[in-house]
View 1 (cartoon, rainbow, N blue to C red):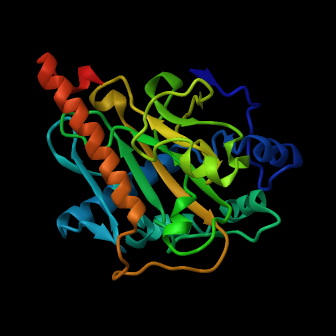
View 2: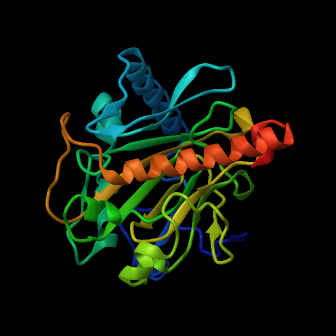
Length: 292
């Protein structure tokens, strides 16, 4: 596994030319300490409040997007993927109006970008943790582009902006990317990997040393995945808030929106991996996590 050999970028309110050139070449950029630790803790409390609301009212989908559920190391239920989280929190909704986030749309030039609070999957909170009942330990190779096709439009540039709420050094798993693949043709974009099913490491992939408060931004056309942590329980915990910055026609979601096909595909990939792990555990008569 390689680590990106990139300079340590810090965001000072605008995208500089070196930052823009780096992003255009690699399709990924990391900004250190985009928010401070106190803000991180405030966002963690807010995401926990949102989770409590969703669990209390037994909500399984938001605007047609399924939530992912699991159990923590104590056996308590928690939500591992929340879509449209800002709809349940004024604090998170106000964060999406931060002028620094709007400034990131410069990375989409010459396209006009906007923060998709009510589009795609909205503000997504991903919560990865390894437990025996976890359903969200990793995420297979994919790009974000087919969502446009499934929604009936042509593929448009977009940014997936991740604000990291936990320290995640390279050895703890986390984001893996194939730099430069946002320049690939349509065939490679659609068929280079088996969407969500393929979790195998790639010799060309790179990973990151991430600290709580860091921001990662990747082009939606870039092949990427989330590597499972080798640890168990609290040490494996990784929480990330993903903000879509998008272009094209305004396509808001609502309570009656259907579940997009790509979410059904992702679920099939998750079930496939769970089934394989369970089979290996039974075969070797050892806990599931030791077989992954």
